[in-house]
Length: 213
Image (cartoon, rainbow, N blue to C red; front, side, top):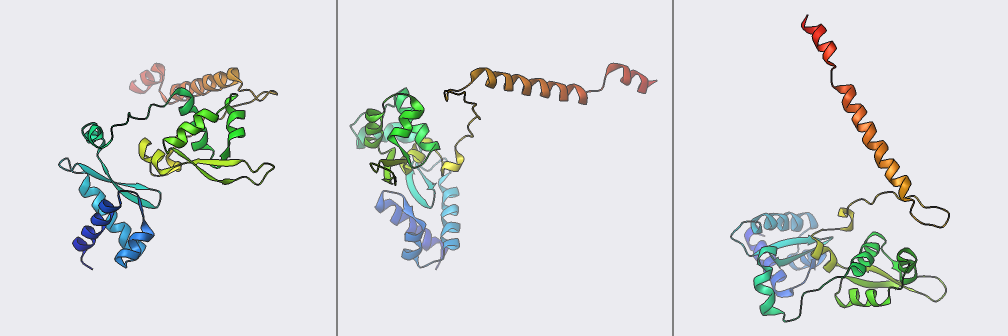
């Protein structure tokens, strides 16, 4: 199959679907192997990065989707969607971060981390399609487990959860509370060690003078 024809077919599929399309779906439609399909998709991604294009091709895990470039969203949004843009509160962002870093987490586990009820926040995140139910935990009561969706990754501009920033390593006391003093002390020790390393690398004025002599 010609590369340009394959690109046209993929573009038509992505445009018509209006959603992320799995690589396996494209393999079936084009009757090509995964390496060929991915190679074509990545070539298309580079083409869509040109300043003259209003769309971009993004990857979400094992799927691809055609979306509006961020700089043009403000012009498109009022026309196609009269609803107000999602406005996430601090509680919603906090809950969303907990779920993102702990896939398949239950409501009770979220509340144990936050220390407050999270029913309303979870419902709101479900409404915005930023999280979804991913099954039931094999435990008494069969509590629902939650994970973030591809909409979350699209909103925050990441391809997979592996791209999330690394969390600091917190210390907990006997009451399972974060020990702030220890964290501060660790940071100070790191800064002191860095300063000592820099001092050790820099030659002293006395030694420089001896070399010149």
